[in-house]
Image (cartoon, rainbow over all chains, first blue to last red; front, side, top):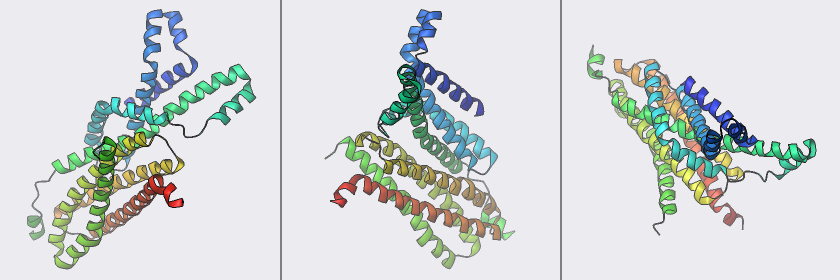
Length: 172
Length: 156
């Protein structure tokens, strides 16, 4: 679990930084074919890694709230598998919702240009926009991860009916 | 009449009704009647089955709520401060429901296998308290939802 979360976090940082800073130019310089592929797919990777990170955080948050190591472990694995299967849909919906403006963003841009000058300000604004977009997708995916974990708990709790007859135990 | 938007909204509202209704029924109708009518052994036996079934119903309806909620945001086409507060409350409700059924419910389930005990009674009281908190937050979410969809009309 920790390994997958770290991987999603690392991928999220690399792809968001690359998208925000135009990192594909560096890749194109080193290997033009890989650079072109990276440029074509980096935005999808930003969305998917952010959604995956959000879902994994949700699953881990859910696991912290549950009692019983076995139930926690089984449910976490099942929720991660379900999360991987639903990742394209969650990333797509999360990305569409994240495109809605929560604020106008104009004041931030103006402040950055004011503070660092036009060129650096515009660059930092693009970087900031990419980070905000990524964070919004991740935040929207957190409840999805939590609820996937909840559904996994439902499945395992329903399946684990202990073969103990309560009446016998009480009469003893 | 049968647009996708309406179906999604219907499922969203139905999920709230099921989650809230089942929690309230269990807290205010089923549990007091069980306490009055059944002896402790039978009560524990039934309570453990109820917790399992109720957990499945509430967590599944919360899942429907989250999925249809995200789709509803797409249909509404914007994110407001009220919606952000609502989303934060939804995360809180899911967390509390997971704690209620996955932690306290699981403990009751485990302990009740060997019959009634004072520990189970304490856990059941806690289970009810969290259930009531979840119900209250869900009611608040419903109020915020009405504010999102009808708020502008109500002010006029």
